[in-house]
Length: 119
Image (tube, rainbow, N blue to C red; front, side):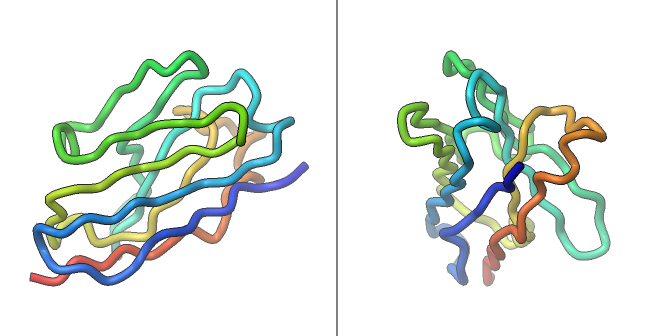
């Protein structure tokens, strides 16, 4: 077993961009739908985008048109390009299988990467 490792977060002004990356071991990643999730202070973790093994994507309304999820199956990575960032995008961002994240997949949560958007 392993876990996902997220990177690319940081502090950015509203309207700016960031690109997040998620690395996974091949045994976890192969043939699985992958999602990006985020948790803002005082709020529950929510799924914001997911992508199937074949590349089909789906987005939460809050990020649709601003964020783009992609994956490189050969490199076992998933990325999230975030444009037109807003202060309400401030959160810790995670990747994992799903959605949904099953009980068995809870062990794959990594440390996440902090995204802070200043107004």
